[in-house]
Length: 134
Image 1 (cartoon, one colour):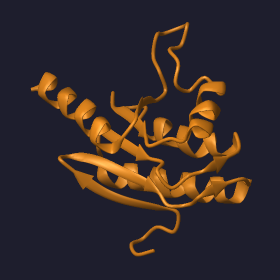
Image 2 (image 1 turned 45 degrees about the vertical axis):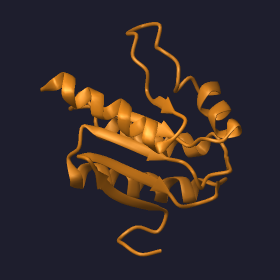
Image 3 (image 1 turned 90 degrees about the horizontal axis):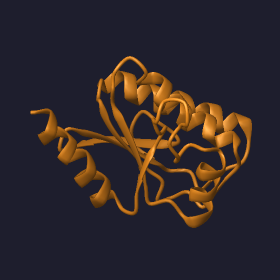
Image 4 (image 1 turned 60 degrees about the horizontal axis):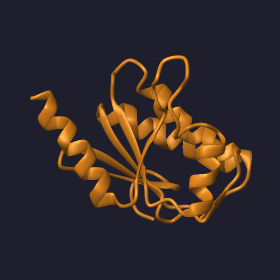
């Protein structure tokens, strides 16, 4: 893999930070922590309020992997940004749902992550957010 990261690819598309997870399976703490570090570094170094996590390459993850993705939310806690997960397999979607990361919080009505079926749909969701802000 090229670039500064081992587990992700980071690029900007239409002002949106797109982070593509390059690993197929996240089953252990070490990979999860390395991926969390890379994701958080990418988010902080690019200072974006609109982020897409493209999970097209992931086929399996344990709940440990959720820590890596929650790191993205934590890195954005001071900015009211949006994070959209896309290209999730049914299994990956079930893990996020089971961890209550795709459902609205009963206490504040917020959702940790939004989801989209494809990268194009995710870009469209966040692009419409930009026009509302203007």
